[in-house]
Image (cartoon, rainbow, N blue to C red):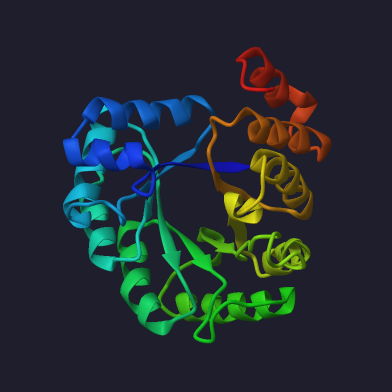
Length: 265
């Protein structure tokens, strides 16, 4: 299971304040804390900053890679100009994700050439010109359409991670089932799957219980990656246990390591 650490996001007040103050130590500490907790990529989202998103994302990536030379970054922005600036700023020895494209042709035309040029992986939301899908079959149809479009631009199927779009069970309870059903269907295309975990529990109390339980169910369905807070021990514990139970952790070595490092509840 690939973990994409979500904490460096300008929707969080402390992150927004650190960006505004150009607090290098705080941003680097957040990145290191997530890597130490098991994150393979650090998601960087400056879209809601009070300043200039393009300048902010350039600064955040620059300060992180200045302290962590092999850091892998997930560039998270609705603004293709901010994504391009982030790609230009990245000089570390890790890997890159772009988050995200949709089935909208205009978005694909702007983002996919950048992904090809900079050799990044892509997160693709299963959302087309007609909006959000309701069924697993709808998600698969959109994924097929996106895959056809990006393949025509030279992007490889194995480097795309489809997000079937979790919706809150507090308002749309049937959507959890449709999301889980869609995972193996999408993976049959030769692509991978990812989710933004916290959406599942929006509006509910004690959200970690819902998040961690749903994540274990998604892993059983074949989920490859998740955008989440790796410092939440309950969620990390569910990943470790689910992967051990699904024979994805030989002799439970990762589970034992996580226990010894104090990362489990």
